[in-house]
Length: 389
Image (tube, rainbow, N blue to C red; front, side, top):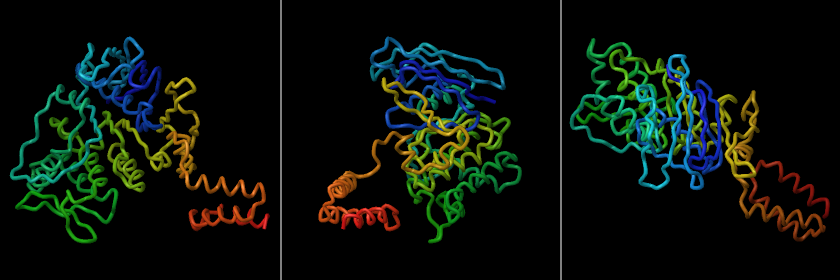
């Protein structure tokens, strides 16, 4: 069992000084663009790498550093990493990470597009060592071998005693993953002539690669998790739900419809009940459904330092917040409405103040056409207009 307890960053990326404690299950790092979400994920993931790193120190410091405290089978241990890198071509550090535990760490970066791949033949699963897994903490797991793995395991599952119990449970769960976001989509078959994965939809069978980019991005993570666990645990094999390592997912909401942004969160929690998950997000819909202990909101203070945002409720998180409130108070948007709307409402209010019926009516007609048909503000504006007519 592998868990991360604590991280302290000094002078790396946009972060001057930040210390974070983590939940043993889900950790959702959020905040405005450029605040350091990916920097935090990279510090955590690359703590299990070798000597290579993509991280850079801040421009105005001599060196950057991060301290990490982890637990290995319940025993805490710590490590400090110093960093002098600043130039683009500098990519090494003097201290190796927790290399012997790199097989317990799975990383997904933002390259999660799945292109059509014709499988003329099926290849065996790659043999990887800890140095290979350490490299993936830097570059992430690539979805290019998902199709080969899925087809191979599906075909062998038809032969008695070819797969063990854990592998059979993994491929069966992989088939179920196609329906986790949309019940109208399900696994159909593997074409015996082309090795293509075929899916059932309300409009008939389609190729797996014909799914939307958002759906495939989700499958790259869900199927990728099962595939990566099988690559890492061969003797003995383990069922994905028994995996108790660490998973990193940069921008979990990438390419996703708002409804699916919450569903991918729920799907990952379903198939990884024992793992510790770290992710970054720009999705207010994901923040709305997350538990309070899972949200790590960041904000800039008056001195431009990255600090934890204490506005989130300790018990309910943001489950009663509107999307607009999350966008402004968590994601750092200064204004969620358009300048056209703001000008119209400003002109209306000025006309009401000076009781200019003609100008107020003109502004009201713009707002009446612009606002949602059920917006209660329309009634308020009508009452104000009637007051000066």
